Length: 134
Image 1: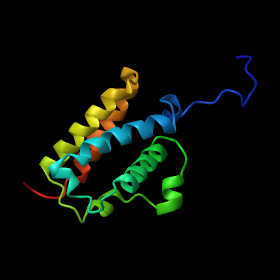
Image 2 (image 1 turned 45 degrees about the vertical axis):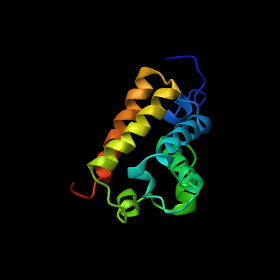
Image 3 (image 1 turned 135 degrees about the vertical axis):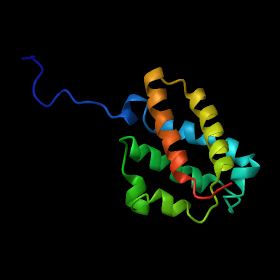
Image 4 (image 1 turned 90 degrees about the vertical axis):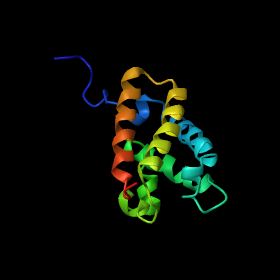
């Protein structure tokens, strides 16, 4: 039996372990810098200002990884496939998305374990968004 009083030892969420909001904001901001210049992905954002999309994506990732539930409080259930259904997401979009995300993730400097865990999720998420054949 350990001598730590009950209730004082809590496991941190992934969100907390990697630095919380600041880390996810940096990741998503760097990702959208790539999207802004990408001919395949940029056309999926009809608005001139990518800021609102950047904010939504950051809030989604923060919630997914154990942070505040602001995304769902503001927008309801994520329903990612439904929200992306109006856009033709093919293999080229998938590859471009992952390329920009890889750059953003590499610049975070996370521990190898955290980087692998986040990357595996991002690869899975990108594959699940494909809704159009070549």
